[in-house]
Length: 325
Image (cartoon, one colour):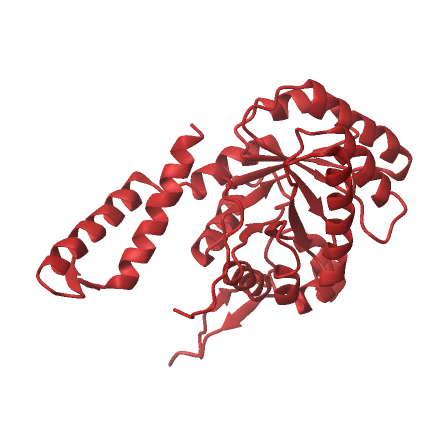
């Protein structure tokens, strides 16, 4: 391991992140009783310009008057390039001690986070609050992805990054109009066989971007979260997208519809089989250590100190999930 030490962000369960438009208060009650780990009330893309002010008022009222249980409560503010942003931050942060995090859209450079950090610090200091808001940033532009490593180091408030696939596709001029899905043209052709036939294999057009963001997160102690999957009627498509991200090392995924919450929770919760296997690895390594061995064979595979780290990660995540019920 490097001698350089990186602090880990505030630990929160973040398997599912439910998006709720601030202009639709009739949806708040259902969101509050859902199984989502994180709920973000939206001031940005899901709210029409004429509804921005009322959405802000709805959010303030709900955060102060509704019982959101042990959910992490977050608000997605409008972008720094709009005149709505400063009032989102000042009005909501000043009025809502229940708020846990801000979701900052379309972050392009570390200075974007610096500006919000300064504003939130001034508000908290003026009100004498000890509770410090956390930040989640949306990486959803080519500029943001180009600066993702610097953004990941921009503030001690920063806890997580989400991959915003729709705006990212628009920013990179990707040839797609779907949100989070694959593309029939994104294939690799195998060589022809002796009969001249060849197989084609679909590829994931978002894999490279997701991987880069995930590495930046893990390098600097943040939680990588996958963004929306637009076709909420396609359960299998959502599960496939979520599982690909889970394999990469993501912590969770957005739910833009309540039906996606349980899907996300199931994918990003370690199964009993995974937990039992992790415990067996740790037990086997402990026995090997007593005999002065640094590695052991288990189930026909070599296990060493790296295996312990992976196993401990699984067990830690499982305990966190169980603590939330």
